[in-house]
Each structure stands twice: as structure tokens, then as C-alpha cells.
Image 1 (tube, one colour):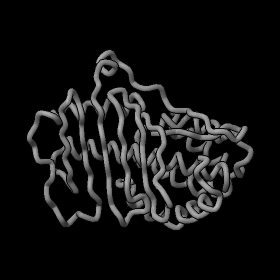
Image 2 (tube, rainbow, N blue to C red; image 1 turned 180 degrees about the vertical axis):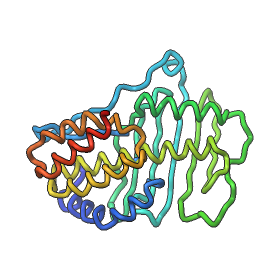
Image 3 (cartoon, one colour; image 1 turned 135 degrees about the vertical axis):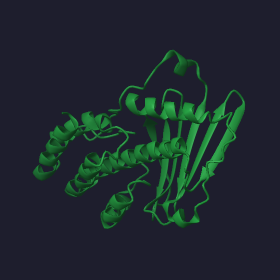
Image 4 (tube, one colour; image 1 turned 30 degrees about the horizontal axis):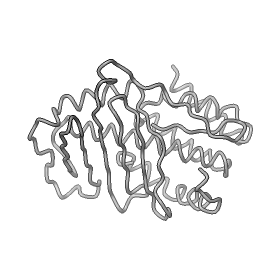
Length: 249
């Protein structure tokens, strides 16, 4: 995070708190990259190993998800990944000077769900129009899905889709984006503004209770690390312990 200046970090955190209530109400729009810091203050990856199968290793397909809603705090999200679920996420937030790009990796469980939905859609071969054309829900933002495989490409864009598989696939990506952005904000707060972490953990707690994350189990290594980080307020470390109990049952 060398490109992030301290004054920008403080500005981001303040903006995130102001918009916290709105972000929770609109969590369906919002992020499974995990780049927390260790106690020494350096970033360390705790992502779950990729879901690997023989087919995934041979499959050269590339998958793309994009979301746009200018009025949201996180107003532009792009996820691209390979058949093994590894790639990157890029997101933009209001008042940010530039987009932020982080490594991205689906957990095994999330990747199985996503792969099953892509297969159910038969995306490259189907001629289905996924856009229901309901302008009344334009406020929820625009979703774009795209696949590249063996020289073939197909993309589709919709605000709302009555196709169950397309809607669920977009929801899987939104949940993954929610998770990735929240992890990034926790990493920034942990380094620069530890006193902000209780608010972010409140948001995480709500998302866990609502089952609104891509895979809460993927966050366990990060949360265990946070629970022993003495830079964080005691109230935050205690809250982490309660969240862990909900996830690890």
C-alpha cells in the first residue's frame, strides 16, 4: 500500500464511517482478497488455497465481473479470475484519487458455487437475454458478465435479471466484492487508525449474521491474527472473538 498516502487513508476511513449505515443497507451491491498485516506491520496473505481440479488446470478460460453505480460509496468494481478462481479485484470509491487493485481468490466453496452457475447458464453457447429491462430498479446498479475461452468471447449486461442463475451469479460476485473491500479497509485501519476497527467489525458482524459474505470461513486466519494484535483496542479484539465463535461452530 505504498501508493496510499496517510492523509488519504484518514480521509477514506472518515468517509467509510459516514457511509456505514448506507453501506449496510445496500450490501447487495457492494467485495476475497485477504491482505492483513502481521504484528510486525507488514502485509501478509492469508487467503485460502485455490480450488484446484484437473479440469481447472487445463481450462484457459478467463471470467470477468463488473459493477457500476455512480451513487454508491463503492461505485465501480471489476473482478477477473481464471478457472482456478485466482485473479484480481479493482474497485473505486467516492473521493478516491485512483482505483485500488488487490489480489483476488475465491475460496473452494465459493468457487464451486460460481462454477456451477456458469455451467448452468451455458454462457458462451446460450443466446439468452439476461436483461429483464426493469428500469424501476435502475438504482441497484449495472452488472456486466464476460467470458473468454478458446478464442471465443461473450458479454452481457443487465440491471436486473429474472434468470435465476444469472441473478445468483451476480450475487455471488457482489458478496465476494463486499468481502474483499471490507478486508482491505480493515487492513488500512489496522495500520493507520486502529481506533476505527470497532466500527468496521460491527459491519463485519452484521454481514456474517446475514450470510452476506462470499465465504466467512476464508476470513478465519485474518480474524485470529486480529484477535491477538495489541495495536487494536481491547473492545475490538473482544468483538473479533465473538465473530470467530459465530463463524467456527
